[in-house]
View 1: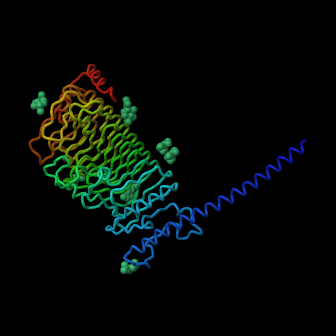
View 2: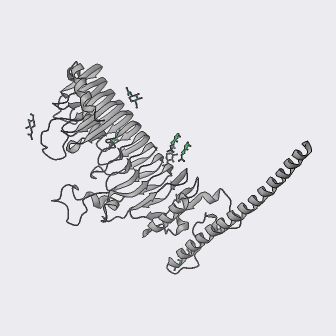
Length: 476
Ligand SMILES: *[C@@H]1O[C@H](CO)[C@@H](O)[C@H](O)[C@H]1NC(C)=O
Ligand SMILES: *[C@@H]1O[C@H](CO)[C@@H](O)[C@H](O)[C@H]1NC(C)=O
Ligand SMILES: *[C@@H]1O[C@H](CO)[C@@H](O)[C@H](O)[C@H]1NC(C)=O
Ligand SMILES: *[C@@H]1O[C@H](CO)[C@@H](O)[C@H](O)[C@H]1NC(C)=O
Ligand SMILES: *[C@@H]1O[C@H](CO)[C@@H](O)[C@H](O)[C@H]1NC(C)=O
Ligand SMILES: *[C@@H]1O[C@H](CO)[C@@H](O)[C@H](O)[C@H]1NC(C)=O
Ligand SMILES: *[C@@H]1O[C@H](CO)[C@@H](O)[C@H](O)[C@H]1NC(C)=O
């Protein structure tokens, strides 16, 4: 009996070993086949590239890091690099490299831990494109070269006008590198505004594209790169969560129109830090649906400062909460720390802190504007996005128009607005400076406060207000 059991165990162990061997053999054959077919695909790509190159069939590939060139023994570390040049990109800044980029993306997306690369010393011209997931985890887009948008204004379906490069449905994705993404937007800036149909040529599209837009993505990082001259926003996160932006540079001339630096909408758990942003509109713009946003160690200017809003346009509901803006230097901006809402909106802005902000020649360093209007006159409306719990702490430096402007809604006052350690001196060259203004803004202030007019600005009290403010914020 005991011996029988032992024999049974022995024979099952034997079968297990045999079975494992068969599996191992089958698997290794399969992966060799897979590598072979991958290799063949690469060769076809290279071949096509040669023929297209002005008949210079003998040109060796400029760079070849794809394992396909040695299909017999592909080192595993190399097989995760997908250089766009190996997918037929010319990299001359003249030919359209969109197809090669799409092909490289498709291949890289399938491999865990892959890196798709725009190598340095090449210029890649690409048309509006969507690079979408889901992809295998930990995909990296390494930008060391120059990535160029078409320099002419383009038209087409709305999807191509909404943005130039659309990153969609990605998780654990990183963009990095020492390269530059150039939106070549100057031709889009000339007609004064997309809303200003009088000055716009008839053929001009009524929308201006964002340069890089993330849509519905999680745990994405953008670091080290430079993004310049976008037709509209430079970097936008829409419906995303777990966003990290670190050590990037955004630059567009002060005269460029509507060119926000970083634009957040419906996005949560965002950290933006150690970056330099100078453009023609807001350096960072935080829109409805955003919460848990931490913006710190940013140099901002030129531009319109760091803004929440405009919120509540056309009577819409806006909800923004838990925002920290800390350790910022603003030079030559129109505004500094700003919240702007349209009249007649609904919803709430809650728990916002602006601290350690140094301003230099900023027109209005501290601003709440509940009468925001992008035309000359907007209709008066009752109701507003309720603003409560806003802290302005350690805002120092020089201003060139007005130190503080808190224009809260007449129907929905601002509550718990705290001002502390404010020291704002007029810039020497400017005249016609205005005093601090507060309208229907409740809260407390704490010395030191310079100019002292800030001290008398806020209204005291507020238990009734909080009720009003709470009932307005219910829709969030
Ligand atoms: C062929 O390629 C070589 C090496 O890159 C280059 O020097 C030569 O100008 C090319 N010829 C043509 C016709 O493109
Ligand atoms: C993303 O990365 C995190 C941390 O490394 C990991 O916990 C998570 O499972 C990953 N998610 C996906 C979809 O790859
Ligand atoms: C995002 O990252 C966090 C922490 O690394 C991880 O717990 C989470 O699963 C990730 N989410 C996704 C959707 O990958
Ligand atoms: C910041 O990015 C630049 C490239 O643009 C790089 O040279 C530098 O090392 C990065 N700094 C940090 C701290 O990562
Ligand atoms: C305010 O926001 C900060 C930053 O997101 C958060 O840590 C804190 O818990 C929030 N406070 C309240 C009362 O929600
Ligand atoms: C502010 O920007 C101006 C150019 O707009 C520059 O000349 C000046 O040096 C900058 N100031 C500081 C303190 O960085
Ligand atoms: C809006 O209301 C203000 C203050 O009551 C008033 O001065 C202004 O003329 C009104 N504007 C319009 C467009 O009705």
